[in-house]
Length: 238
Length: 291
Image 1: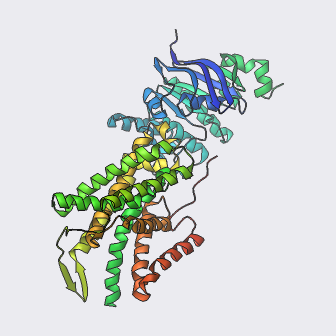
Image 2: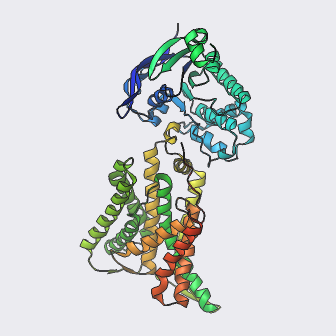
Image 3: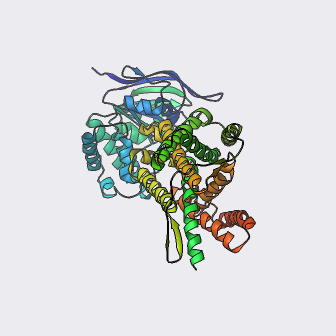
């Protein structure tokens, strides 16, 4: 028996007259990894921005029993949804440590924060080595680790990750994905957006396929992985 | 030689006051990428706050300083809340015009209440010391000491505290900061409060050093401090201080070698020359364009 963490119903996002997301519905169950896959411009990033309050939207977004629509990003984070944006959103002029502290902004429990800082640095030992360095001096892979680590510092119930593989060498992509798997195994619910459909579908439990703002397929990730339509369009196999 | 040393002391005093005002321009620019053109008038009105306070209640210097800083901080927060926040996402030019408008409202309100210059009552009876041919007054030491103390406190605040960290983060990427759970509006309000409070301290110190205050003095002094912030690299707090002391020195020493009417000519020429070679100011760096 699973319990719904995030329920999205009839989500519509407009940019002026253009509907970028055309009324999609899906849900993320507690403890799972749900992947949103699709081509460039399918509306994946826009969907995430709507969920975290960065973009006005219509429809209903429920985190457990709380409605999120109309709240500001900082209120939504306080309710337990943490968004790692596309391009990572690292503050390059702040140190690695300061970036992590900023991630824990909403938390007042100093002892627990210090403990979690240790936990994040155990997951990403590179961040410990570079704690006092400016985040802008990190490599792309390290910045991605910092972005994920920083999101963990908020102790969110659900982590939404936008293109964690973007711009990374294949080996680093493997590394990031294995960390995402570990986090999930420890109980974090994850909503993952990826253009790298192959990797995403191998990692996720369930997946949704978006095409030009519509949700066209939904099901267990293993099924999407073998679906001829998905294989042809996104996995480069004819 | 003594004469130059004496002028150097005057330059440091003037530079300190410019620095306190320049910090307000620079901090607000840092978080909002907006030039708060009302800031010079906030500085001006703070010296009137001080004047009124002393008329009603002759409090000691430090108490007057703190009360005026608090009152000016509240004014700064109100300006941001009422005039700038509604235009946060409006075209940049609207915010600039609004800032100029706020400045004019403050200036003309003051002018309507006090059409003439006012003589500031003495806040403090200075003692002067002579040594090695130099004259130093305790007022000069107080002005420089308070200014430097406030600057060090600000530097600490920005580098070491939670809100300081959030300000630096907002300066880099205002879009991502709310995703960290940081209430951006609150941080911006704190920025305005601090910027205005420093302007308020400058108003009190300026009025003690040059005790004739008028509703239009914010224009001249405010512009100079703005120039100082630009020379140093607007948005950069240490740059604002560097620019202010440089500007104070140029002003004071220009007058020692040239007729005083050349002062502003030299100052603005310096601005132009520095901007030709360092378009982002001495310590400024080009903004990173995000795509």
